[in-house]
Image 1 (cartoon, one colour):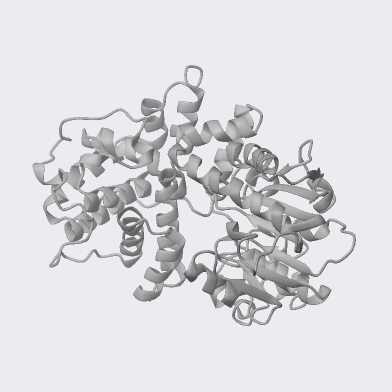
Image 2 (cartoon, rainbow, N blue to C red):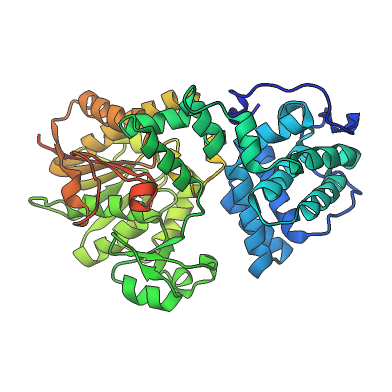
Length: 490
């Protein structure tokens, strides 16, 4: 059972006109059977393959869809349509499953995986796009016929039942009343699991209206952000080159107006990389704080896949500094090597917690340390829509333990007078305020918080009371990045 099914009532019985083949088979792979008739529309096929891979293989939508589009030779409007269908379906999955379950008369867990993903895709077209109802129904039935031939009649009945009711009326039927269950209502209306909504609300001071604005923003397709690498490109010039516009806050940010960043010359020749503006801001904040004495040894303790290391390395080249980039996973370490090619960056494929136990990571030897800690990723749900359904509260204990251990290692790696920036792409307070407070306490190192607000560009709104900073999609247009900066005092 996927995480978004946990709070949902279960259905029973069969939809009108449905037959038995729609029920789940023993084969749960979700792969299309051989000999099935191919569907008529390649964009829908691409979207289906991406959605199926996410659920079948735990794939990441952004990675798998890109490969599928390339393999199928799709571009232009077809690629854009496939992208909209993929990301839209994955964002709306929780509510789509409620609707499909009601129309089918059974929980989605009891529907064959190939038919289930096709029905999710078809329901999204019916309820969230301008695709005519007859086209959405017919194309979905064709798709089901190709991936689960015995379920075509079942799919036809379910799709026709869904098409008889507007999205607004489906919401009115399935969502609890806001006055009686505000979190439950927001969960159905805005397609987020209830535990994530509660975490967002807590981080926003319990303001459910503000939380709703965040949920709405989370469901919007985000603009692609580029980072113009200092010393290699200027943001204004890069914006002109790619037909974009300079970012609102980061001096390195460029917003793309459309198209694939893979095709940009600036990406291929290393003058820029794709990186959310919030990630740029928190990495640059570490370098904005004044420091006394030596300032030539910087450490990126969790460097994969290399975006922040690339920015740090670019700036290091102009400041006469060197960056040590640590990444425990070998394939991600190779990505860091590629991202920092030609920069004063040394990549070490090792565990960042080995500070003091490995000669390459001696204690009290670095001037600035970045800890971009592994986290739930709840701050980037706009860009990784599947994460909201994949993550569960049970993920937190192991993650927060790792986060504390990495912060402890960073505080031991930095010299007295040096700086540590603790960063997560999550606003969950257990991963932010609790982790940084507990990590600093357990480190046995004396350190003071630096007011991180002063390290961000002037004029940024709603940065809170400090000393830490939480960025937000609905306030700053960035991922929900958290930043705490500590100076080791002894």
